[in-house]
Image (cartoon, rainbow, N blue to C red; front, side):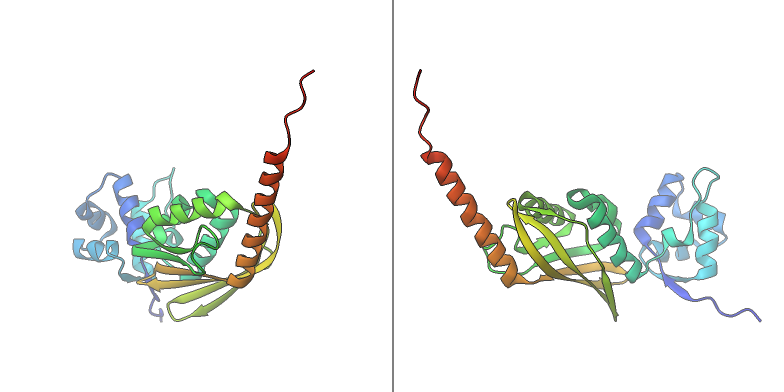
Length: 228
């Protein structure tokens, strides 16, 4: 006896993107996959479908040149969190296009800490806000690749934990513990809180900024060489 397929959250934006890339309406996709237009509308709004249905839709969207897999149409919060961290590792300031499809409407990125201690503290809205945070972060930080990354799974949440190493304004910084809290709504990231060691971060920033100020002062104090 065939067991009932497990229901899985659909990435509605990716499904719609694949459909439009074929030049199809929702009705055409429904006809090609053997389902109702109502089901396609539900899926593109981020509903859940059983695995067999998703497989059939993926096959309908596939071409020999561009096959579509179940994985590319579905949402797994752990996989999404890992995709985020992998994009952070690989693309850094250019990571937004790699993760934009996984962000919910109203997404916000929260970086706690004392205002003014570092330039990237605050709450940032949407993809534009995320890009703004990345620009601010990488304007002062040069980071090394993460070491071991730990993932803790909760209900509609994932925590990614690692030690972040690198420099701040060119000054070597001690490893800082990062706890990145992902909060999901309907399978998409609604909120991320970058819960890092704010005390160590503030000390590192203060030390680096003081050193930069001293160096700038020394440069200004150097007299012009005498004319020959």
